[in-house]
Image (cartoon, rainbow, N blue to C red; front, side, top):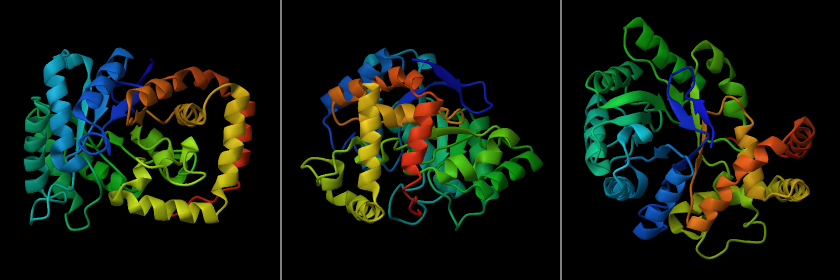
Amino acid sequence: MFYRRLGKSGLQVSALSFGSWVTFGDQIGNSVAEACMQKAYEAGINFFDNAESYAGGRSEEIMGSILDKFAWPRDTYVLSSKVFWGGKKPNQEGLSRKHVIEACHAALKRLRVEYLDLYFCHRPDPNTPIEETVRAMDTLVQQGKILYWGTSEWSAAEIMEAYAIARECYLTPPTMEQPQYNMLVRRKVEEEFKRLYESIGLGTTIWSPLASGFLTGKYNQGIPDGSRLSMPAYDFLVKRFERMRERGVIEVLDTIQSIACKLGTTMPQLAIAWCLKNRNVSTVILGASHLEQLEENLKSLDAVESLDDEIMGEIDIALSRFVELES
């Protein structure tokens, strides 16, 4: 494993990290979750990602019980949560001061820790002034309940507004953003955020490096039973994939598969290694529905050195044939 600083901060995160979206509390049992957490930690992963909305809080409870069981030294891992979707009643969602602070307290309880290393605003909230959210996050930092705060799927303009407010009011500014980034979703990380890496030292903890499984090739011939796309809650991904098919994504994926074969690696390993080649990616969040999948994806570290300028050029040519969908 190798480590990168989270943007311009002094915090070091493993190049590969482990997240629980979809899997913990939904797709896998507690014993598999425990085995994956242990394998990840033993492999050098030090960042574990979660959110209040994952499995309605159950994901955090499972991760918390695992952390409690293994009793790893707290200074050997980085733990996150995200705030936005906490429930359906008034004040149980969004980024109001009330929900931000109460959601943090609830996450700490579920995860069984005294503080969160990273706390993300899971989406922008058009109903709450950004200044209110910035002040709430600063309060949590001053109380020692979170160490760094950031955003997820915010625009560059929204991040810059939060940063400017924090600087003007002598508050803690956002440190990181958690965007989707993969071979099929590139615009925000590579273009929109480009000026933020230098101007404010933005770090990124990117999610979905395999494009929800599309970059594994397993959906090229249909939707296998037990896969994410077979789950009713993810019907939106099925619709998205159908739109991608119409834009010729299968031909692009076939080309990427052939490049992986030429390098003696797998398509998922190539896709993850490709993300790591971007120096503005602080860490790539992996998910896994079984231990063997995690073990295979960890091998993507070995593929990074194989991606020289020539290979990256071949990949760019292949990807240029696909027009990214709008969010």
